[in-house]
Image 1 (cartoon, one colour):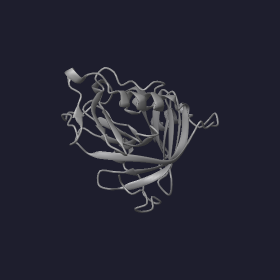
Image 2 (cartoon, one colour; image 1 turned 60 degrees about the vertical axis):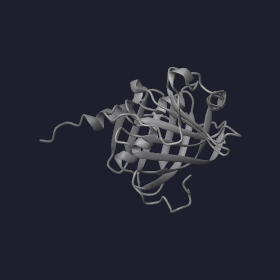
Image 3 (cartoon, helix red, strand yellow; image 1 turned 135 degrees about the vertical axis):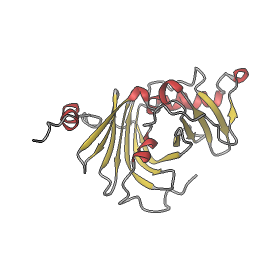
Image 4 (spheres, one colour; image 1 turned 180 degrees about the horizontal axis):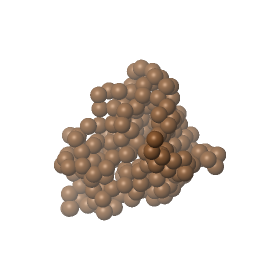
Length: 229
């Protein structure tokens, strides 16, 4: 696992590719490859292992949580900040420092807000890997589990769903004792990884009503600006 104290995240502005670490990955053309050490869930092994299902059930039972995150891009770029999660479908990432980015899902859409440029990009939640994390029940059926790696200090589950994010994949890493989520990695269609690590996590948190609010009217005005004359 990467050292989250390697360097300060302040002052790092996330690129569009880094945003993919939050699950904003769409269909691509590359073939899906399993990382070394993963056991492929072939048709003869289609049943999800008991350990993986226990982890999924435990994570599904966590209805709200908050904490801090550190994100590593494909070239080692590092950003970070605070996150807030509430099932079903709601999550928010606030970048720290001068990045001026926020990512918010309200259960229907995922908004990427650039406060410096005053722009907002919207994506349907149903077409991002975040949906797999934010559903009321984590669904490991239907061949979504493509690999599992069990170690003494880490259980890794690799998921893929072509109907959601094409040839990309998401890899989730859990503590095998507490079943708590530690980090996830999004691998895009070009095989480039973006990893998000979470820490200082609190569960059972209550949030203000507007924590996951997306201002659709403001977004519409930003998108459809009147032509300049």
